[in-house]
Structures are given as C-alpha cells and as structure tokens.
Length: 70
Image (tube, rainbow, N blue to C red; front, side):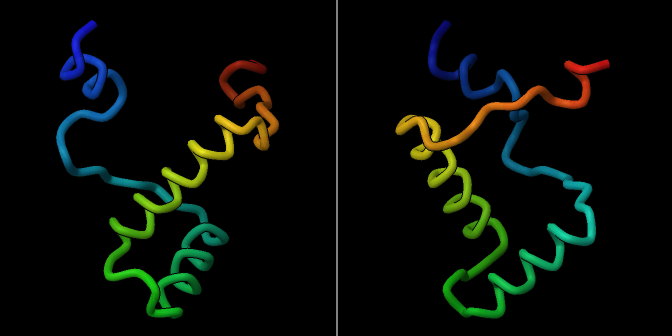
C-alpha cells in the first residue's frame, strides 16, 4: 500500500466532525484556557502524537472497544 492510500485508510480529507461527550469537551476547554495551544486542531495534533508515542513505548493498555464486545 502506498503512503497516500495508507493516509486515507481511516481519515478522509483534512476536516473532521467530532461528537464529544461533556467530559471530553470540558477537558478540551480547560486545556485551551492554558493558552498553550493556538487552536483545537493543534491540541488534537499534540494529543495524537503523544498517544502514538505512548503506544510505541507500550505505556497504553489496549482494551476492547464497545463494538468488539457486542
């Protein structure tokens, strides 16, 4: 699979519509209030990069998703 196909496997295009629970929305607002992030997009970019690094180091426990348990 080439790089372009790999990038399009789960994320289509450059925009996303997210449905957030109240807890996640509150956490995003708290993080944005620190002034450390220029935008929510940048905050999400940092979060994904850090999560990916934790996965690579084995620091994230992988659990079954709701769909896998049904």
